[in-house]
Length: 257
Image 1 (cartoon, helix red, strand yellow):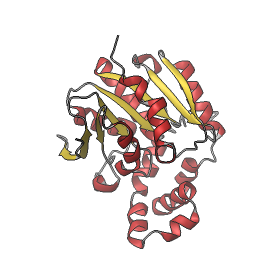
Image 2 (cartoon, helix red, strand yellow):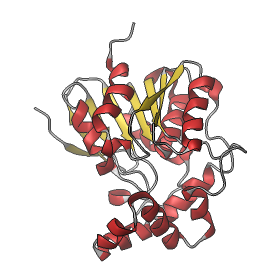
Image 3 (cartoon, rainbow, N blue to C red):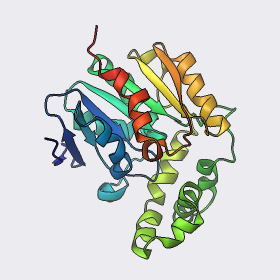
Image 4 (tube, one colour):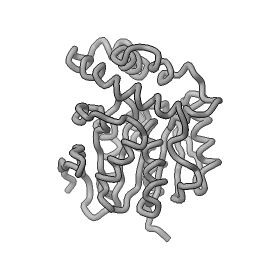
């Protein structure tokens, strides 16, 4: 029977463990301005066959009081602390994919495999400068968070949110803008340092730069390939959770050769 148990890492970060005790550990890492709840549907797809870890990244939701740094390296150190020497599979959505790759580069054989989904490679010259992330860097942090959310969920859904929820999201603008700026300044991991298998996902409705990024990862990481989720956009962990699990996670759950 699957149960969800809250834990605290050595650095005080709160996280959840759920699913099958003793199963392969799968860490679900959410993207910018999201939270652990955003990966819940994916967790439900795999909880009978794996031991799932979800957590609100530093600066968001239950960990919104974290003082940073809100960088890929800072977030990767949280994953290291949560794992506490345990072997794991890392699944990263959007910005979370960079965290997964950076953690794999740091921990080597402790990371069994990685999957990314539409992970931004903002440091490349070909990455457009008019994306939602780039636009968020030119306005006050609260405004940046609001604009980012509206672009993600639409104005109508944003207007329907309770004012307390809107204020909470606006307050997360500091983490949002800082982490996005950090990947504009340079690559947070080195291709040569990532030895594990990697699946690089994108949706058939992906923006062109998200698709190009996933294909670049599939072509340039040592043991990687790219997969497309039919009918999905950037929010695939919610809209296409079953396909997300089938294409990006289950291939990693097979026993190692």
